[in-house]
Image (cartoon, rainbow over the protein chains, first blue to last red):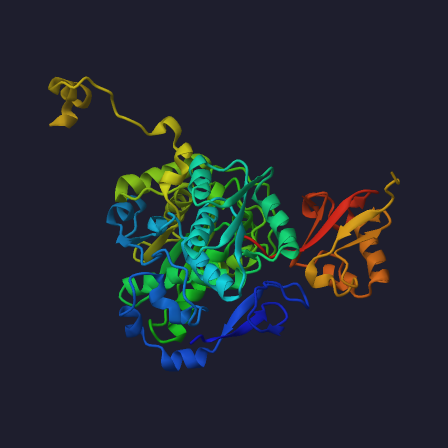
Length: 410
Length: 95
């Protein structure tokens, strides 16, 4: 059974029955889901979760899917790696990396899309759609293929090659739009009124966002049912950070983990830093920016949940910072060289911001810190360019190894 | 072909009950603030759904003029000319 009761406007409190709708008809505010929390607390047990499948669907009782057959590619329960090498580099003693780059389509987006695709089918919609900076595109196309649904996907035309190929391969309708993500998103916000499609991150948005809460659920379970002291997550639209925060809060309300004040810090690229800038100047409203960064998956100049992410950061005592393109590449390389995890530019942003916040004393040495790595490095090879490549090219003769490695060969 | 003399305004689905179901309405050129005032006269209640009492655009509403966010233009003071297309959209989408 589902504990979902309906939708409620976050602004004016107006209530609606569950439906593929994301905007309050009264005030245009964003809708969120309402659950029967008392029943959840009374009936759900975390040992039932432990006995569940080795995927995000072990938490299905906490998700708004009810008894619907889920659209599942085997998403989730990704590794939480203790990262002592990275920790030493950052001057921190208890660092973990949540490696969500190893999901079926190589990013965390399989979590929200798994929930949205399941609900789209349950609502009787036959076409999955989205506006995407690349990772969502591949995930929606793959889930549509798996569910036997049609898909229509809108992306900015300048995306990385792997994100285009890695989406088109699923047999979707992939539409490249001349413009940046914000233009794509505006087009899709108009299209949602014109077509009866399930835009996972527009009209299915209240459901979609819930999938990202499993990032917090898994982290808590993998730490032995406790929350970390501090998490660092990237901010594009801002939804992931707010859903991670909500996920930990929910587990505390359920009594599944001890009461902990989880500090939440956000990571942006300097070339697209609307939330970091609002944080720095103490603003409450987000001023949009025109993105210009190699972190294309974070290049949202007008983040839908930006104000909510900002509020969550401030409430938690965390911080929000941004890093330059060269620092992003350094962050990608630091994580790869210290922990063997190859992340895309967005992960480079998160690692580089963690480094910055550690040096600033915001991340404290004794805190248990979890760094969320949300996408795979193979998707953004362009960012590394010629900077990473063979150490040498040699003839197949033994002495050549000594020649090129010198003392390092010993 | 007739000369275009009006500004065309795209109305999002949640506001269409106010416009008798119309997805597009027109108004005389002027500032965005003038245009919204004219629409409020034709479709009472329209202004309150788009602007705060202090005249700023509401937090959960985005307004675009010829595909450009008015926050990159002059906000509600943006001048609209005949043939311009205005799109009013709920702000929370995407990401």
